[in-house]
Image 1 (cartoon, rainbow, N blue to C red):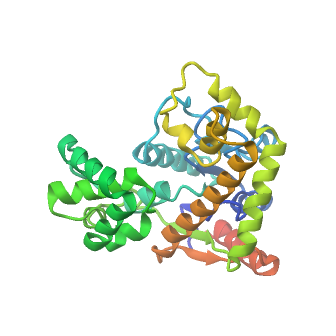
Image 2: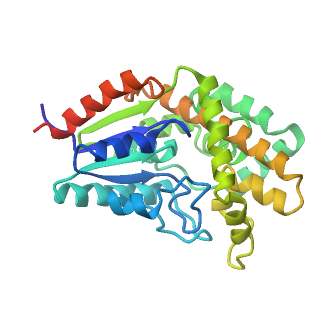
Image 3: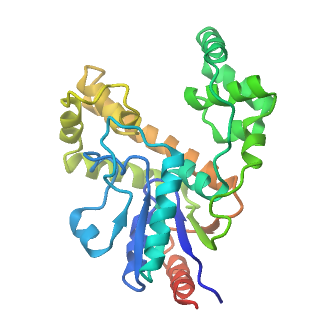
Length: 312
């Protein structure tokens, strides 16, 4: 059995992805590549569940702290950086393990990024005007009529992605899903072992999400957001500040409700994020599903992954 060129571990927030990767690190020589759109930013530590310095000293991690939060970081940049990291890790004789929950990044790596039509300010303005009149959920329903596949992936309250999908269809006459299906995968020449943590008990996942956020708050998450808020170089429009948890706590600090309300909104948003992550996984049959909350079952899969890593 030939060993893969890289192992991918995806799953919803709080499902135990990092713990699984660190368990693998105890048994085989791996290096971890973060697949997380918040961990790329310096200063986004507690709220992104960034591994602490001791963990990063024990197991090498990549694509962490590579941008200042006022800078942007795209899925295309992630793909380029991840491919370099995979090659470098392989050249050192170790196994790259890509771990995270930013499913857009995984999708771009596995399926590629479609060469979509360029933005049309006039079309976007028309879409925005309809959204102002009808609401984004109504435009999401329009998207479902012309591109059910994209509508399944995109949340009704995600105006940026709804707008882009409608814009692509309007200017090209083709759905964004059609464009994406015609895209060549940048990892087409690599053998990938892909595993996704998919809990059967969603109620338990919700409990873990709430507990995780409580631990973040106890670790000083609010102070972290306050530090970011005081940075003169970080505009409120920065993409980094739209991350779940950061957005809700920033709103509280700027007078948008009590701390308890902000925490409740952040936990609810985290649950919605988990649902979207699972929707991405469900739509892609290439992921091999693992049950993360059954220790015996997970141990079996860990043994299998270790065997795959050691295969030659």
